[in-house]
Image 1 (tube, rainbow, N blue to C red):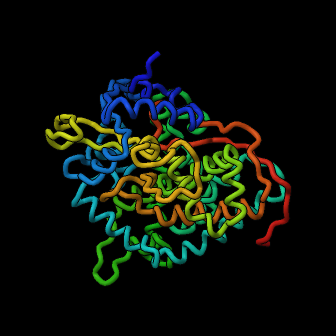
Image 2: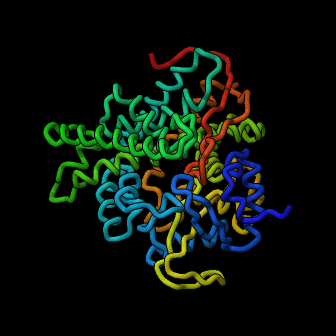
Image 3: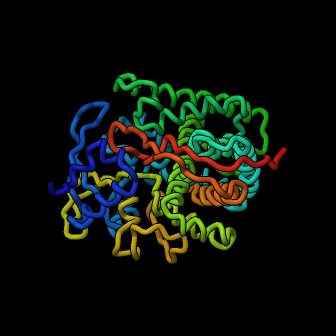
Length: 423
């Protein structure tokens, strides 16, 4: 049977192993730069039409043209959502300028390499803490024991969230990132799933609002304090802007690292020669290896844009309101840009992947931190647990629709127990 773009709408497409899914994307990519897809919204059960964008050049071009392809009508979901709900979960990534530029500019002040220096230093400490927690066991679920807690602990420490609230944040982010998976959400009833999403968002919002109120009275050196205090006349996030930003940070801020660690370990298991190269030269190989993991895994599945006017691109005529969905993983394996794109090559150079989004105003603000987290974690795993091996198939999220994050929820690994180093 001929593969068609409608395959993308099938939840089973997203539950395949990564290599199988990308092999099908490779077929679709050659059928044209824009492929029409109709998908049923699993919550509203209404049909939504969009154009799938699977080629690198078009993903990059659309990303660079926010005036023609906007984010403010929805970027993290195919379906249109009420503006209040969309912005509650998406903060400034679902906005256009000038609102986007203002909020991103405020946050960006705290995300420069200089301002992040303290956080970047803490990545090593938190990583040691996480690996210490498993190193004597000999066998764990990598996702539950490493991939999930590691980036979220860094975010909580960065924001000033007390460790006593970590489980609350973890459970809420799992619901939001779970793409409707009953194991993550706790139900398979669409109406209950929607309620769980809203409840998880409110839990994070209430936690952040309480912390912000305390930091306004008792500032410290954490990111929350920086975002609520005016320094030298600089603008700050309004109270109703802070909670959505925290939800964005807690969810989007950990998904690249979480999914990158899980897929990265599985990619190394499938490519033992590349793993051997990495372990033979950890320091020299890590930067390129991390970029290759992000390219090959492409943790963020998609972002959506909406045509703001009638226009033509790559021979296709768009009408105002047409939805385009940028599939980053497919673009990252476009043979027009990447040599032998289906091969996992930790020495790949150049590697102009769009795993952190395409160029333009919505490029991932936390890319620098994510790269640091992936570098430190793989360095520790490959040196402290040198024989760590995957001992079972990765279990993907059972997404209801097209998942925003192509996550793995379980990945069993085994290794020779070693002594902790941080105690």
